Amino acid sequence: MFKSAESVERLANRLARLPGIGRKSAARLAFHILKLTKEEAFELADIIREVKEKVGFCSVCNNISESDPCRICADPERDKTVICVVEETSDAAALDKAEGFNGMFHILGGRLSPLDGIGPDDLKIQELLDRLQAGEVKELILATNPNVEGEATAIYLSKLFKPMGLKVTRIARGLPVGSDLEYADSITLTRALEGRQEF
Amino acid sequence: MFKSAESVERLANRLARLPGIGRKSAARLAFHILKLTKEEAFELADIIREVKEKVGFCSVCNNISESDPCRICADPERDKTVICVVEETSDAAALDKAEGFNGMFHILGGRLSPLDGIGPDDLKIQELLDRLQAGEVKELILATNPNVEGEATAIYLSKLFKPMGLKVTRIARGLPVGSDLEYADSITLTRALEGRQEF
Image (cartoon, rainbow over all chains, first blue to last red):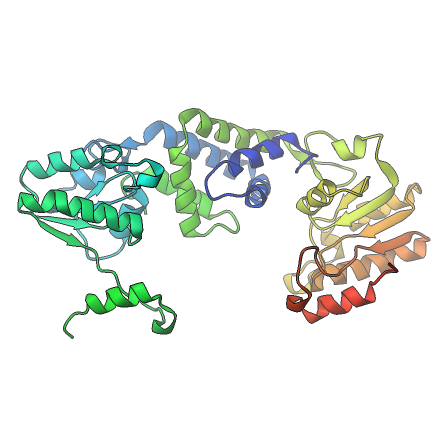
């Protein structure tokens, strides 16, 4: 696309290989990067290198981390009796940013998806079992995504861990705050009714 | 957001400062970059550095370029009697990719926008005048964007350059190929009628 400057073309091609970035977004991004000052662009390049050099995975919760165990697992202020199970690091980051949870996380690294050939052995389920067998944990919050595969994963985990005598909970599914009842889909409305609580 | 890995947080912050990238997209992008192999991530970092080190602007047409004059201006195969005037490099890249144009470009570096304080002196109009005064050019195609500011810029340029005895044309405004007449806005329809051609 940028016939006049081959390196910009290569940058756009490289960016277009990132998931969720199409040809046009990649070209626009490359163009924006070109417009940065030299300092800003070099800073960006350096952070990308740094991220790959420093960041690994926490051996306890499988979260991304610069240390092992990660900052969350090593934090003495957090409640070690509750583990919130999520699919991806970004889910844990979102939950951690929201108020109301001060426990630990466990990142599965995906969801059960037979169509994509992803079974229990491809997720960090054995590692979760090991954590639970240590005995300290009292509640397991299943916070996989509220879609077909996330629900299936939650059901699978609940069947696996409930017999261990743990309290196993699922995050509430219902109407998102600020939304319109009129535009909500019927499955969400059903779940909102099922999950109703005394006022 | 990524409390567990501070460098990922910094990468997301840096990406969020690029135009058109919000906090959430930046976090998702940072996460994708983290998932690249070390080689891929380093390649990305290196291209970003390379782009800033190599790419400058062509002194003739103001396009981004690794050489001066740029590849397009230096190409002996291209028709030097036609200059297509665009707002940004990305516009020139899009037109160059489409078939049917083999002339030269001139990148204004923006559009007239009195509300943003952008006047004729902020665009590369003097440079365009210099190119035209060299005498080789026969046609000037005004290809600024078909919106209010782009039209105003085109009108301004046409008033400036028509007295020089040049053929000054404007790219056609009409229905985009593959679109539905039913859903087109009325200004586009008016322009499509005005610009009708014999079949």
